[in-house]
Image 1 (tube, rainbow, N blue to C red):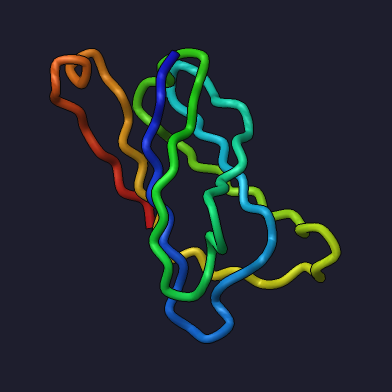
Image 2 (cartoon, rainbow, N blue to C red; image 1 turned 180 degrees about the vertical axis):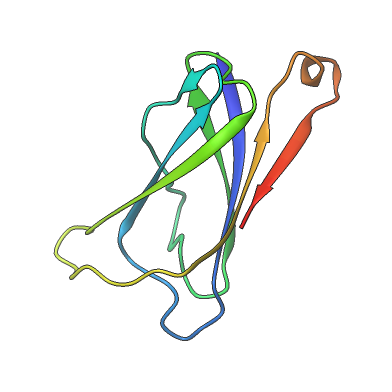
Length: 107
């Protein structure tokens, strides 16, 4: 099993945040993760927020070539716009098991 660290930042504008459910799928040259809900305690995607998550995958995906974000309405709240500012993925590698890893930034 591989675990990817994902950092998501929401834009600074007054209406940049959302109550919607945000999920992520990572695609690499060696495969694709399952859809994973990004959720921590509290409001995850407020204006100006930066949150970190762990995204599990059954196997290492290799270099990440696509980050797919899914946005779905949450409960009874009406669907809203969301300004995703950045997504940073830290991928595990064989070296990371020895304490060295690599990062890939997507904006």
